[in-house]
Amino acid sequence: MTASSTFSSRISPPEDIDAAARALLDGALVVLPTETVYGLAARADDPDAVQRIYDVKGRPAGHPLIVHVADGMAALAGSWGADPLPLARSLAEEFWPGPMTLVVPRGPRTPDIVTGGQSTVAIRVPSHPVAAAVLLRMDELDPAGAPHGVAAPSANRFGRVSPTTYADAHAELAHRLQSRDVLLDGGPSEVGVESTIVDCTGDLPRILRPGSVTAGEIAAVCNCTVDDVRDGVTDIRVSGSLPSHYAPDAQVVVSPDLQAAIALLMAHVEAGARVDRIGLIAPASEPTPEGVRRLAAPKNSDDYARDLYAALRRADDDALALVLAIPPGADEGPVDAVIDRLHRAAAPRS
Ligand code: TXA
Ligand code: MG
Image (cartoon, rainbow, N blue to C red; front, side):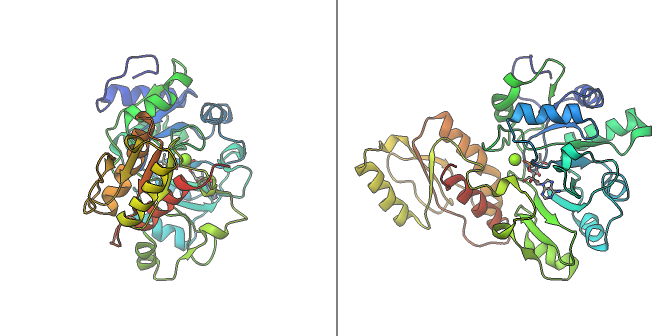
């Protein structure tokens, strides 16, 4: 489906997947559904195409991008990446394809515009069938160039909430694309928050961005402790670590439980906020105070991650002034990732 065609939601058929692979090989952009969030893809070895990603997103230069590939091991071994260290190899074997990005020493094929000039590159193998099919098709169409890679940040304008549905990606970017660009529909993203980013260049894995693959799962695979340096990262740029990232227009307030949320709500009402312009994102066990718009009622942290970004977008669609968010309770799922995104959505704008 091209940028100029009228919007209708459906899973893109094989001919659209073929068209998207050809468009990427020709240097055009593709809105690509993945299991985490929708991405905006360009072939990673075409600096002009990658530059358009920055232009369309309004993303500042120098923020590095993730290279998405079909064949992760080939990509790690001396093309996009340099020879993989044992740590990267074991995480790749366990978690690819899937919502896990590995930061490894950069290989000869990765241009500066993708890495922001750093000596490392971030690589991921998406599991979403549409993303996987596009990447495979690129390798089939141009086997001499395999393994092809596409740089793909989330398909949102810089600093905004990542889209997790075709409709949200379309609303965010379609008007900024050209007729040769392609938008693919893969249905709602199952995971709903961006991939876990693990720096594999040191002795121990370091989580740079929490996602649905948890620190516990990583520790179990590498049989080691896992550094979580999100707050202390100074040498590596992670744009998701900027305080104002993932923010909707509505003010987001994170509060530990409904009682505290109601106290906050009352304070806002007393300060003049209208109760019908207040939304609530809270575990299903929490009731909805009268007059408040319930945006999501997740049963566990997996549901929470899946529904969070779409709920924040609904808040803006409905012009809500305030969103109260009660974090998920402890469970085995992506609690850290959800709390991280909630706090970023609630952080003051820079
Ligand atoms: O789930 C995801 O990862 C999605 C989907 C589309 O795959 N992509 C995504 O891309 O979230 P983006 O550009 O929105 O976030 C990529 C993050 C940025 O915070 C960037 O700083 C970090 O990855 N990154 C990229 N290369 C890096 C590197 N060499 N070292 C450290 N961080 C890096
Ligand atoms: Mg992003």
